[in-house]
Length: 132
Image (cartoon, rainbow, N blue to C red; front, side, top):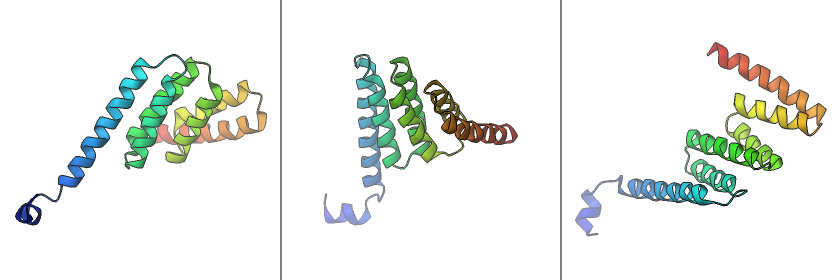
């Protein structure tokens, strides 16, 4: 890149390159999830959520984390699903679906005290979401 190009060129060029690399990385992780063996699909979506979160795209991260939870639950990996649901709660504390999932996982694992805490948070979040 010449001196004049740098001086008068677009200041968005590095941002556009960064966005392009992010899109490529996420597309690669999605393709990896589509071809992954059973038991590994959720890992790819979880990583895509992490990549999205690091890039500052919280909404996309939550969507990928949701897909990871679905995949982990389909594969019977409850603790992995719990871990990803907790990631969602850190990103969005009022995430109704994640709180509901945590409540059910707690009940299935017979973690009564934690189930009550997650149930309380779930009810509060659901009521808040209904009013918004």
